[in-house]
Image (tube, rainbow, N blue to C red):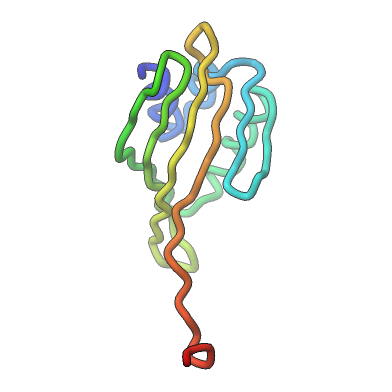
Length: 123
């Protein structure tokens, strides 16, 4: 799990060089809206552009579980200000690793609260 600890430490510190070292050259990231980023340089550039733009961004690891030498899941929360209100986004991230232990795939799933029925839709 060392690579994941280094990955998240680098992400929190915005240390893009250290983060790059955790990734395989062919890394592929699929986000919660099926948005895909392919390649280490593109993925690091994406994070280096997005993370600093998020107001009061914080990342909290909740649980990390390795399934095998080649895969793991991480439960975490990302917190940021949305319209001036601190908002938490619980997520599950699935990771795959190459033979050298670097991250080759990241799949991101966001937990969302249930929809609140509108008054005019209630029977």
